[in-house]
Image 1 (spheres, rainbow over the protein chains, first blue to last red):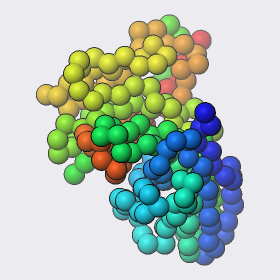
Image 2 (image 1 turned 135 degrees about the horizontal axis):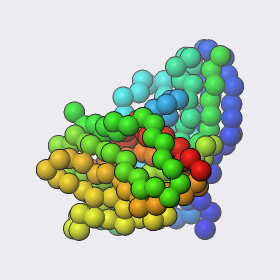
Image 3 (image 1 turned 30 degrees about the horizontal axis):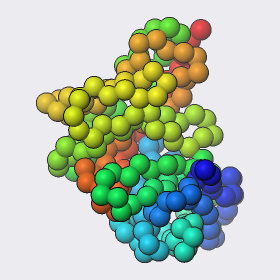
Length: 115
Length: 116
């Protein structure tokens, strides 16, 4: 069973640029959530994708957007990067639809630095 | 407002000593409760979770946690700490239903250092 993978591992961008981060779900999972973890903070929920549609969003501006593909992998896109976007971005996958709580399994994260 | 508070930013214990990490939450209803561990450069690993029933839950690596509804707390404990337990620990809460939006709210974390 393959776990959650994320790419790239590290990324450096400059202010104003756009970035795309990728996540491959754990086998059999149909839901992907994205979290932002700033230095010294806990992860904060950005949004969740279920059946290729956004299904829940945290307090993040529209320049944070995402996609989920038919194979349940996902992308996080951030436009017009700001210095405060520098963080570890975590992807978590889960299986939804069984009527019980669905544990989220986290990937290792992508470290984004905005200069 | 929904929130999780971990009052201890940094804790140092000696190897073999006992450990307790504190967690308090504010939530509309009794949420699902979790403890995660994060080692440097790693993602989050689930240590244990509480959904309902027995308020003392056992997790991996010898950790346990006790849910106290009256105190809105979910403290993590370990009787004897090992050097490999040095990491950052996060308490989190989530909605108590099996819905699609199982968003987690995390505390700010407690960084555990273990002295030889």
